[in-house]
Every structure is written in C-alpha cells, then in structure tokens.
Amino acid sequence: MKRLVYLTCSVLLLASCSKNITSKNIDPKNPSTVPSYTLFTQAQLNLANNITSPSVNVNIWRLIQQQWTETTYTDESNYDLGTRAIPDGWWNAWYRTILLNFQQAKAFAAIDVVNTDKNVLKNDTTIIDIQQVYAYYVLVTTFGNIPYTQSLNTAIPFPKYDDAKTVYYALLDRLDADIAALSTGSASWGGADLIYGGDVTAWKKFANSLKLTMGILIADDDPAKSKTVVEAAAPNVFTSNDDNALFAFAASPPNTNPVWTNLVQSGRQDFVAANTTMDLALGLSDPRVPLFFTTDNAGAYSGGVPGKGNTYSVFSKPSTTITAPDYPGDILDYAEIQFYLAEAAARGYNVGGTAGTFYTNGIKASISFWGGSDAAATTYLALPSVAYATATGTWQQKIGTQAYLALYNRGFESWNEFRRLDYPLLKTPTNALSGYPVRFAYPAKEQNVNYPNYNAAATAIGGDLVTTKLWFDKN
Image (cartoon, rainbow, N blue to C red; front, side):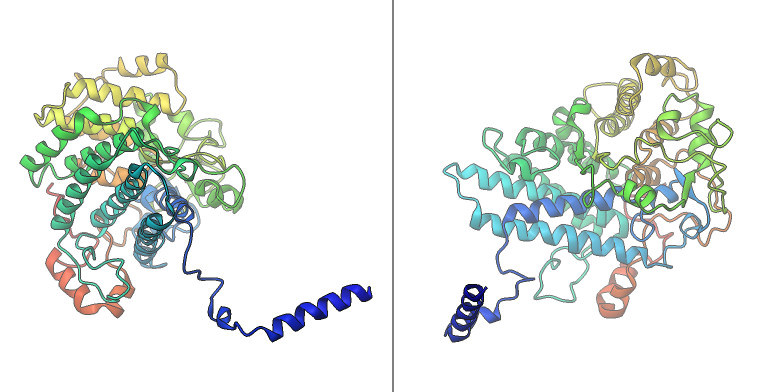
C-alpha cells in the first residue's frame, strides 16, 4: 500500500512541476485533427439516418406521401410543419451533420491518406464530393434557393442564398467532374465506407444513377437539358438490385435502423398504414402488401385515414421487415432508376429501351427487393390494371402509380416523384392546415438571424410558403 501511495505522489509531483503548460490549452472534446475515415463514416451514418428516419422532428415524408398516417398526434399528417420546427431540423441535419462532416473529412484526407497510388486520395475525395452533391440535391429540391457558394464557410456566418436552378446545374457539373475523376483501378475508403465498402466501380454507377435522377427531375422545366443529361447517364446506371445504395445499419444500438429506433425501441405506437397506399395496393392485388405491412386486428389489411386520430390496434402497421434493427437504409435503388428510364423513354429520350420495358423492370425489381417471387411478379404484371399496355391513364399516371408503390418507405423520393407526375391522387387530410406541401418553408432561425438573405430568397422564389412551387414543378 505504501508503494502505491509513494508512486501516486511521485506522479502528482512530476505533473505539478512540469514547465510545459501549453497542453492545458487543448480542448479534448474538439480535437484539431481527426482521422478522415471517422468523419467520413459519421457523415454517411448521418445521411442514411436522415433520409430514412421516421422522426416527426426531421423526416415526415412518409406522412405527407400517405404511406403511413398517425394515431394520437396528427399534426404532421395534417401538414403542420411548424410545431417542432421541422424545416429547421431538416436544414440543420444536411448542412451541419452531413455536408460539414464530409467537408472536414475531405480536408483531413489530404493529411492522413498516404499511399503510393495517388489515385487513392483522388478517389476518396471524389466519393465524398458525390455524396455532397446528393446532400445539396436534397436541400435544393426541398427549399428552393439555398446557401451554396458561401455555405460551409465559418468565416461567413450569414451566407447569401443562391438561385436554385443555378445551384442545380452547378451540381450536375460537379457530378460530371466526379464521374470523370474516379479511377476504378485504385482503392478508396474500404471498410470505412458503409454503403459500397470502397468499391469505386459501384460509386461510379451511383454517380451516374444520381445524374439520371437529377436529369429527369428537370424534364418539365428544361426538356433539352434533361434529355442531354439523362441520355449521357443512362448507359452507366444501376443494372440490378445488386447495385442498390444501401447503408448497413448495425443489429444493436447505437447505430441501428432509425425506423426500429423510433417505432420499436421507443415503445411508441404513433404510426399505422395509411389507407391511401393500402387501398391502392389492395385494389391492384399487389403482392407486396404483406411485405409492406402487418395484418390488422381482424387478420386482414387496412389503413387509417390521413390526418385523423386512428386507433393503433385496429389497423395494419409497417412490416417487421422494415422495423428490424439492421434493416438497411435505402438511398438510391435499381427499381427507382428503372421508373426514371421508363419516364425518359415515354418523353422520347434515347435511353436504350421502351417505356413499357423499363416500367416492367421497375416492378419486377421492387417485388424482388421486398422478398417477393418471380412468379408473383409475373402474375401481377399480367393483370390488365397493371400491365403497361392496358393500365389506366396516361404514361404519367401509369408510371407515377407504380413508382409510388415501389417507393414505399422512401418518402422523400416519393415526394420528388409525385411533385412532377402528380399521380396517384392523394387524399386531403382530415384537418389540413394548408394545401399539399410542395416545399418546406425556410427555417425560423434563418428568418431571425439571416433575415436580409432570407428575405431576398423568399421573394425570389415567389414567397416562403409550403405551397410555392419550385422551378422544376410545372404541373
């Protein structure tokens, strides 16, 4: 015991006699250098969390798109976006926890990525840039004009807002440069990449698929530009479900599927199936119904009324598949891309196939992804109400309806698709506080601390309202 006491005293004495006190100025909670791979992985986790989360504080797209609806608290299903400052949460998530982390990872990669193959660092920073393009794509299609050229610059606390269309075209240019910069013969992030495991070829396909996604979004506003972008990307996009951009969540906390975290771990009973999606799928005899939802209390399938207080025990709920703790976060997938190609073909673009072929591929890919059989897909596609040649309506209605079903559990992407094609018809919520939200209003904090720039942006887009259509939304 005496030896222990003497040793402790000696250590304390040495510490107190040290002349080097500069270490006292180092903040252990905010290190000046961080391994780039930790920032990269954290940014990916934040991206996957935010695009897949069902939290009513951040991501309410499943409710807006009436895939799910609420039980006791019905604010979000009734388009109340301000109770918990949802636009603030969405804005902060993408700028602060995603874009900024990726930016810092890019800076530190230049320091700690040491490899004789110079293309490794180039691949690393390019893959970061592709995901930053995706993040800005989410922001600019949510809000309209956004801080871009002055964003992420701590020396500019009150950044200006850039014109949304100009930002969008700049993002397309960045994506082209990224695609050209990737070297498929060299390595990248390896195990730090929880989407593709550092597979550069996979990231090149993702970048082209994102390019096609962005190209088709502007088809009604700038058909010529859209056609050029889509036709350039089409030969190099996803070719099967094996290419899907899926984030690998963990089977146990803390980095679990946010749907499990919010619906199962929390013990809350906030959501049931919405009858908009349920009735549409049942009416088409869709084989994905039991893959999307549980049975209700009568052993059948039913959905609650959007915007109404629905009894949790009565209706179907999200399936146990998507509420598993390690269910992956779906960021971009093959089925989605096939529907964009179907739309491109219907518009007369040269994308290597017909609208009917891509439409069929999209349905097959979605059913397979959800665990359905080839036989079930064949039977479904043989129905006159489903087959492209005989399904009701224009190409917008046919593709919009089936894309809506394929984008189940992917609310944000469903919202983007719906704003352009306007199908299927959604219901007016019971106590809607506004018309259908075609954008998020700007965060309240921007109005409070960055008012001149906020006001200029709000004026430029035609008013800071949830019903103000953005530049690409022409219908």
